[in-house]
Amino acid sequence: MTTINDVDLDNGTVNVAEYSQTNAALAGLKEKYAVLPDVNTPAGYELAKAGIKELTSFRTSLEDARKRVKEPFLQAGKIIDAEAKRITAELVALEDPLKAAKKEVDDRKERERQERIARLQVKVDAIKAMPAQVRGQSSAKISEMLDRVGEIDAMHDFYDLTKEAVAARQEALDELTRMLTERLTFEAAEEERRALEAQNAELRRQQEAQQAELQRQQEELQRQQRELQDQREAIERERAALNPAPAAQEPAPAPAAAVAQAEPIPAAKPKKTDNRQWRAVVTDKSALIAAIAAGYGTEDLLIIDQAALDSLANDARQNLELAGVRAEPVPAAA
Image 1: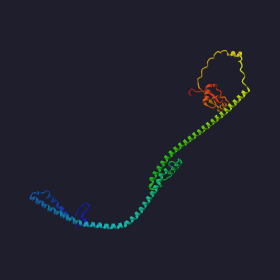
Image 2 (image 1 turned 60 degrees about the vertical axis):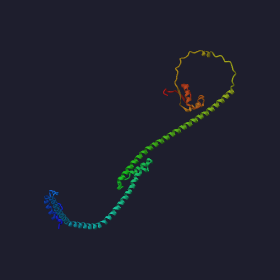
Image 3 (image 1 turned 90 degrees about the vertical axis):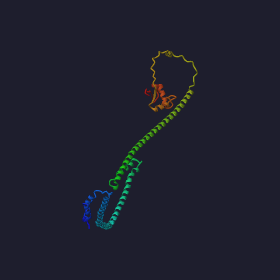
Image 4 (image 1 turned 180 degrees about the horizontal axis):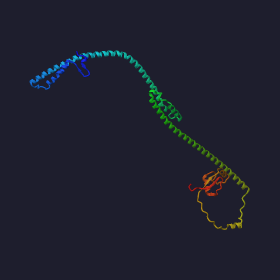
């Protein structure tokens, strides 16, 4: 009987008598049947037939030996497999409860990890939502939120989601910084706009007050002019009543001196014509109003009117005599 000792596993050889015998006969068989006989001839045909029979005998003997030699090894393999299976089953029976217990702990830890991640994800999402809470609000609110985000410890409080927390915190800081810059610019523009509106409103108020005062002064001047005109008319009536008109008389002869003065006088050298335009400059409005009220103006100058004043200045020029007003030439550039 062939044993495991007859098999050389390292060199891949086996010590079987039939194998050795057949292997020894191979050299002679190779030489004997090296040339294929001509099977078309009776001698060649018989030679081929005898060769097949001989080689078949060697081959079948070798196959029978292989099966016989291998059978113990097959049985040993089955025994080996069965024993291994039995031992494995007993090991599995011991291993399975341990694996089940370990799996229960692992599953619990995984559930806890997932729950922790879910809670941390809520905190990460809250960081991402912080800029939206102050969008459109004042710069003070945005600055306060910027401080709150800056105080978040993303490196130590988020464990499994540290990377996500750090990214969310930085994104929130960047967005809040942009929002703060835009809001400060907007608030500065709004402050400037409100200041300009207040300034314009004050200017309008002052203009309205000046117009109202001017209207009041003009109305007062008109009232004084009416009173003055009434007084003049009353004085004229009294004067007419006290001094009736004298009868018409022959004109008295002119004195000699007057006749002498009437003699033609040599014409003086003509002065250079001044074609410049003149204008009136009000230096004292109160004095002007008083002068108009006292009747020192003209029929056209019943109220303070710049066009009428300019007309007087252009006519009288340096000879203009009206309280609170002076005449001056209009500059060529004007």
